Amino acid sequence: MVEHIPLELPENPRLAGNITHFARALRRAGLPIGPGRVIDAIRAVEVAGFTERRDFYWTLHACFVNRPEHRLIFRQIFRLYWRDPRYLEHMMAAMLPAIRGVQEERAGQAGEKRAAEALLDGAEAPDFDVQQDEDEGETQIEIDASFTTSSEEKLKTLDFEQMSTAEMAQAKRMLARMRLPVDPMPTRRMQPSLRGGVDPAKTLRAAMRTGGDIRSIARRAPRTRWPNLVVLCDISGSMSQYSRVVLHFLHAVSNAKGAGWAKVHAFTFGTRLTNITRHLDHRDVDAALAAAGAEAQDWEGGTRIGECIETFNRDWSRRVLGQGAVVLLITDGLDRGAPEVLARQMQRLHLSAKRLIWLNPLLRWDEFAPKARGIAAMLPHVDSFRAGHSIASLEELAQVISRKDDVGEKARLMGLIGR
Image (tube, rainbow, N blue to C red; front, side):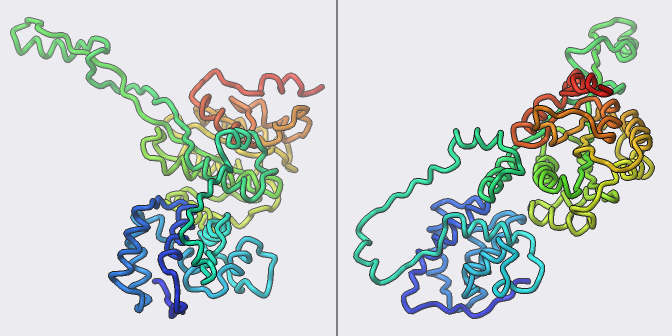
């Protein structure tokens, strides 16, 4: 339940301007708000008044929120903008956790950083001073030309680890729009079809009802179904930056209706295996990743790839790898365990999956070679070996994930093993 404190409004509050700026921050945070909603909100506040703090909150909520996943972001931005007298300092503290003395001693709530970025992203608090009254007759038009088509193309090839805070925020918005399409799989079950092959049994049964006279030929075709997607994501210290971005992408894939996958199962591993599938069901990405981070206690820790894959093969493979599941393994392959154990578990995982695709951010280097023992042990047991360090690499994955002949860089790198 939302907690309210009294609103301290100045004598000349310029409420319409503040509501407009508040709506602009909500739009930056991902809420679909246009000029019409801003006008409706201003008129609604005029009718409802703002003497009652609860009425003021729910009036704006009714005008700006129409989806359940937007409630959390609205609540955070409302708290920072309207109810905190030092909201700018608190936003800076949310963006820079190292600052002390301003930020409250508590864990950041889901969506708080996203709300702070929306308010700080070129949206300084409007300074409605009395001295500006003389400029009211002038119309000032500002055009934000950042992240146009050319800059987005440049951003696609940029390494996730080299992105600034603004570039990372824009990259996550681009990933939220991406999809990972897959072709349906034929099954042994048949269904009626106008263009399929002849169905002898159905044709003869129809002929028996007419005295043996075949008046029409029934046809059938194989029934299709969608496969499952199983993701094993490395969240160790060397992979933390990439894994967070990839989980944003997986959240968009798992919540995209009609994208093709029957079910998306997600697991994280570092020193232990954690199932975060249910957390990705949250519609809000910040709430989903916050819950996943609380579930997985080994973020930015060590790496035990062989042991974690062994745990998956023993406890989860029969549950989630049936019916032609595609496995997406996201790791750099830097494992300190025994390579024999890792190779054996990778072989078992490969035999259990329809396809096993390995995304490795180390492939961003042109001179990459499988010299590490873990990489050399894993590489023979994957169907495709591809880079996973940028938006462009994820787009390439979306284009080839249904191609059975795609091997990525595996063939080239297999020739380098043992040299």
